[in-house]
Every structure is written in C-alpha cells, then in structure tokens.
Image (cartoon, rainbow, N blue to C red; front, side, top):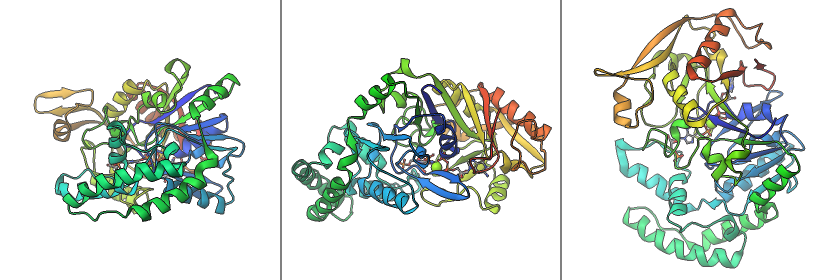
Length: 423
Ligand code: GDP
Ligand code: IMO
Ligand code: MG
C-alpha cells in the first residue's frame, strides 16, 4: 500500500475512522499525527460500534502497530480510560501493538479549564470547541511551557514542572473567574496515569524509521478536517493543529519524500459541528439526516450542522493536501433525496470565488452557486460493487470527484466495514 496520508477534506467527521479501519487491512502501521481527544472516529465491525478518540482506528485489526505520534496532544486520563474500554470489549492493547510518543504534549486540567472558561467569556463569539483543552495545550507547546509524555512518566520531573505550571495557571484561572486547581490532586492523578502509560512510551520517530527500513507500509490517520486546520481552515473557527497532509510529516517525523499517497475522505454532503461559516448549510437536509438519527457528534453528542456538498471546499482541500484519491462516505444519506444540490462556486456581491476565501467573515457572506443532480431514490446500503450502484448515484459520485479534482477510490454506503465499494 506504501505510505499513505489520510485526511478529512471538509470540516471533520467525514468518516475517517471507517476508512482507516478498511485501509488498515493493507497497512502494517497506523499513526495518529495531530489533534487530541477532540477527535471521535467511529468504526463499525460486525455491528459493534467503537469510537476512538486518541488511539488510532487501526487498533481493531490484530497484528497492526498503532502509534500516537509527537504531533498529538494527549490527555493521559482520557487515554488510559480509552485503553481500558477497548480491553473490556476484547480488543488487545499491549506495548506490542500500541506505542505512544515520548514527545507528544500532555493535556492537563488547566488546559480544559481555560478552554471552557474562554469559550464562556467569548459568549456569542465562541468557537464551539469540544472543551477538551486542545487550544490551550497547543498554545503551551508553542510557548514552550508544555509538559511532554517524557515528563509525565518521570515522577520527579512531573512534580517539579507541574507545580510551576499550576501556580502560574491558577493566577490566570482566578483572574478569569474560574476555580484554581489543587496541585496535590492533579499530581496524584497524572502520576498514576503516567505509571500506567510508561510501558507504551517510545521514541516513535526512531521506531517509524526502523519500520520503514523493514519495509512496513504506514497509514497516517488524520484527525479533524481541512477547514479546521490552524493555518488553512476558517480561522478562528478552527482547531489548534495542522490537520492537513503536511501535519503528517511534522507530527510523526516521517519526511515528505517518504509519503507516497494522500487519500481525502469526504461525505457526499457537508457537515460541521461547532461555530463558523458553512456556506452550503441547509435546514432541509439537516432535518432529513437528524430525522434518520444521523449526524450527532461522536465526541460531544452535539447535532452536526448539515448542508449540500461543497465542491469549492473539497477542490480547495485537494489543492492544500495534494489529495490523490477520494473516499466518498455516507452516499446512502442521500438515498431518499429527489434533487441533490452541489455547490460549484461562491458569490459575494459582484465577486465570484472558485476557492475558499481566507476571511471567515467574507466566507460567511458567500452565497453558494448550485448545480442540481437528480436523486436515485432507492437504497444503496446493500450495494457492494460500483456496477450495482444506481446509475444516478454513480453519476453523482463521479461528478463530485471530478469537481474535487481527485480520483474516485472508494464509495461508502454504510458505516460497516463491508459497506465499502472500491472503484
Ligand atoms: P470521523 O471523525 O471522520 O472518523 O467520522 P465520525 O465517526 O465522527 O462520523 C462519521 C459517522 O458516519 C459515523 O457515525 C460513522 O459510523 C458513519 N459512517 C461512515 N461512513 C458511512 C457511510 O458510508 N454510511 C453511513 N450511513 N454512515 C457512515
Ligand atoms: P474528528 O477527528 C469535527 C471542531 C470543534 C470546534 C473546533 C475547535 O472526529 O473529525 P477544539 O476542541 O479542537 O478546540 O474545537 O473544531 N472539532 C471537530 N469537529 N470533528 C472533529 O474531529 C473535531 N475536532 C474538533 O467542534 O468547532
Ligand atoms: Mg469524528
């Protein structure tokens, strides 16, 4: 399979977890390279649902090595509980199949407190974060005051660094009207988590290069989506990491010339959870999908905002990520729609855009220009080959791939592993 980066081509929740699980069959190693437990990646195997937040979605396949890379911010309490949860469901998580980077940054309680408090203070201008402390944790990393996993697993270092950081953060928290933290309590909890995680911790850069020398094929699991990227997304309504393909290099230590392919995952329509512009947002399609019990956040349970497929956005995503192949998911979500709209350009006043403008305010003022496709109006969930898809569904996925400027690779017609059509 060679080394493949998989990214979300929209605003997150494109179905990356499902596609990672499918592609893991051909891979040896799966690496998460950015984000933290703000992610929620759903995998359905034999009708059993698992939601992964930090551990790569490859963990559901035995004998695959799963790695959390240096670019991830890791909430150790969340990670330990995710490991316990998987084990309770009969999934092995041992130092043989799961490794954590010693230089991944640690998400601490003051990050979560600050995240929540800042959102509260922003009032109607809030970002709608997952409140997992992601922004403040990456902020500390950039400010060079973060703790890394290596600090977490060394009690003496943890005690010294945490004590300093809690002192400073308590001043900030108090000044914002939030409750200060108890060093003793936080230290006890995090020291214990560090002890649990220690056997899994390694220099993952060296490990990944050893794996490559041994001929391993690596799959890089993106989290979030292109338009939540800190640099390329709809700033400030973004997450705090580089979710796009470049992040796979910096977040893992595997250099660009060793990357062979970029797969973009996108839904056959658009969703977004949290605030910020979403040009093709549409109440009718929101009602339809929510009515089917679909499109509720895998991490926070919030209803996702829904809209028509936005080809301006996905074409932009192909450009920024260098997407070669596309996996189109949730095609079955449109099974009952009579007439399906696809946005092919934006208009704002007299100006027309065929790319996503950088200013979130400008983007929010953009009117989508649509073309319409006739719906196929029959179930696709049992189709297993491209030929078996209704002709109008084939036309639709081909058209949105062309508009997105990348090759059609997979069409997905249900959450299950088997509901995957290779084109
Ligand atoms: P991720 O964050 O990109 O991994 O996506 P999420 O797991 O947050 O959300 C995607 C949702 O769509 C999950 O509930 C998946 O089980 C579901 N899903 C993925 N592909 C398909 C599909 O082709 N059809 C249907 N019906 N559901 C899908
Ligand atoms: P996966 O990997 C969808 C959104 C939040 C908010 C913004 C910032 O499952 O696709 P943060 O907590 O990161 O500071 O929130 O980003 N967001 C996601 N939306 N899927 C995700 O992950 C997301 N992770 C963060 O809703 O708008
Ligand atoms: Mg998700």
